[in-house]
View 1 (tube, one colour):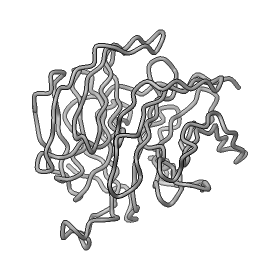
View 2 (cartoon, one colour):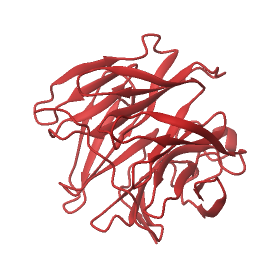
View 3 (spheres, helix red, strand yellow):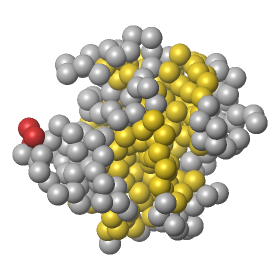
View 4 (cartoon, helix red, strand yellow):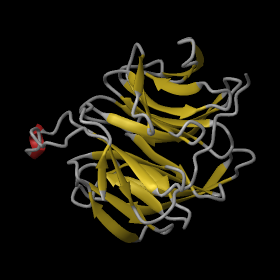
Length: 291
């Protein structure tokens, strides 16, 4: 069953994040430079605007948000509206901009970059950013870093390149943030669904939004396709599990740039919806900052 959360369309909705403390959903609209939050009980919504494209965000232990804006990572206080630059990662913005990011089991913000030009080269990276502002490049040679997610035990990380287009599996140490044992588990076609944002469930499988095929794909850890769910939007971008039982998937989508697929007038383009995928998801960690 599909539940439409808002009538509004977003240009490039991305990075949904469930806040279990407030029972609220955050997400971003990348080119608009906005972070949104929706209280699921009252349906009241707020948003904050930033001076640049907002690629992704995460929740911090202090109540602040960690936000990827243009080429930098910021710490933002939604109560005061004050932000500070935590890490300057991509000085070559707008050629490179930050894209998909998520807080890992190690309490660090993992965020990737992408070549934001029409013809993309392998110049993007995946970074690990800690609360003291230290940034470490973990992976390079990417066109569009995307789809980062971890299994419930924190021992496996999935990561994709939307223009590879491929999905990799890594061994992950939740105590140190070290990664290794890179394994390419699936190469995808446009018809299968190029991998955009992803999330893991409690059964250890990986859900990937197939932005080019209007679907959500479920893979096992070896990349075998277990299920393909047709989405009610032409270009789903990312999902986040949430609600009290973690069985609701909140899904963002794209409305820009659909004319070449004949979908520029699709009635549900760019909308935000909820769907029960039949399994509970893995809670996403919070950024380990200080008050």
